[in-house]
Length: 186
Image (cartoon, rainbow, N blue to C red; front, side, top):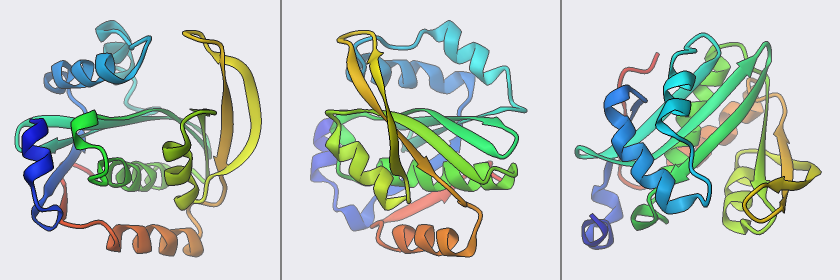
C-alpha cells in the first residue's frame, strides 16, 4: 500500500469517507498499532460504536483499504474529538483534512457548536492542521499521555456552525486534490 500511495498522482486520488463499521476495525486497529504507543483495543472501539446517539466514527478508504479514521463524542452543543489517525503511508495526502471536514459536518448536523480536542505538544503537524480548522490553544493537560507523560495542548474551535466557519471549511475542501466521496453520511 505504501508504494501505491507514493506513486499515485494526488489529483487522481479518490478517498471514500464513510461511517466506521465493525468490518473496518481490522484496518483501524492496524493503523492504531502503527501510530499510537498505547493503541485502543477492539473492545474499546466496539463499545464506542455501540453509542451512536453520542458518538460519530468515520473511516477513510482508498479502494478497500482503510487509510485513516476519526471519532467524536457529543454532549449537547459540545463535541470532543476522541481520535484522528492516518496510516503513515498515506500522510501528506490530505486524508486527515478529508476526515475532519466530514466529522465537523456530522457534528454540526447533531447541533454541536463548539469542538475540543487534545494533541501532543510535540505534534506540530497535527496542531497546524487543527489551526486551519479554526482550533486555537486553550490550555495544557500536564502529563496527559501515559506512555511518556507528555503534555497535551487543549484546543477549541468555537461556533463551528456559523457562516464564517462553514466558509472556512469550504475553502479547505477546495484545496484538497482529487475526489472525496461521502458514503452513508447524512
